[in-house]
Structure formats: C-alpha cells, structure tokens
Length: 149
Image 1: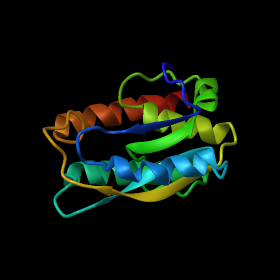
Image 2: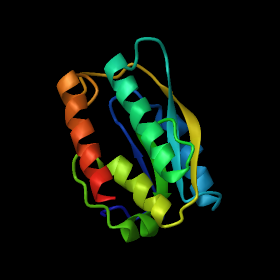
Image 3: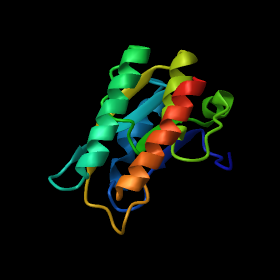
Image 4: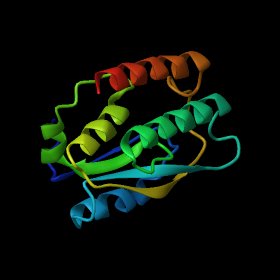
C-alpha cells in the first residue's frame, strides 16, 4: 500500500533470488503483456528442501485444477500494477497472500504469466521452508485462503 510506483514487484530478500532478474517479471507488466507475472523458481540441487518442494507442487496442481491456469510454482518473485493490486483487496497478512493474489487475480480476469528465475541457496534460515513446522503453517494459511476463495 505504501508503494508509489505504477508497477510493484515482490521478492524474497534472503539472497535466494537475484534482483538483476526483476525485469523478467516487471517488464511484461510495464509493457501491458500480462497483469500478474510470477517468477517460477529454477533451483540448483539442494537449494529447495524436499518437503517445501512437494508442498508447493501439490498446491500448484490444485490451483491449476481450480482455475485452469498452468501454474507450477506460486513464486516468491512477482509483479503487478499497484492500482490493480489494491483493487483486489488482498486480506491475508501471513503466508497465504501469494495464493490469494493468484486466485483473486484470476477471478478478476487478469492475464497471468510465468517466467523462469534463478533460485539459489538462501542466506540464513527460512521461517517458511526451512522447517517442516513452517511449511505446515504455510499449508494451513493456504488452506484458509482456498476455503475463502
């Protein structure tokens, strides 16, 4: 909400994503090719814990079945127009907001695209994918978003 630029980008800031790749997700928005661009993680070996990869894959399949979108990752790097994001009225303030953005964007008729982004070993420990508990908490938040959708 505090952002002032027309195109707003999101990305994890733990060193796992390369900010130099942001144009891959922002340029298609700025060029009006899509309304939401999601960076699909392409991980090197050992970068993404197996429990998190499996949970993400299962969620992506569920989203694909529900929406008809081809989604293989909910992606921690994404971009959209600020005004359109605000119009979605996103409510989740925990780990469900990426899913809520995709579901509400799809319901609003958004053109949703994906592009590959490099996913490297993170700096520090993740509160989400670094532990099974964090992954379970994220799953619970995502389930809540799915029930509300």
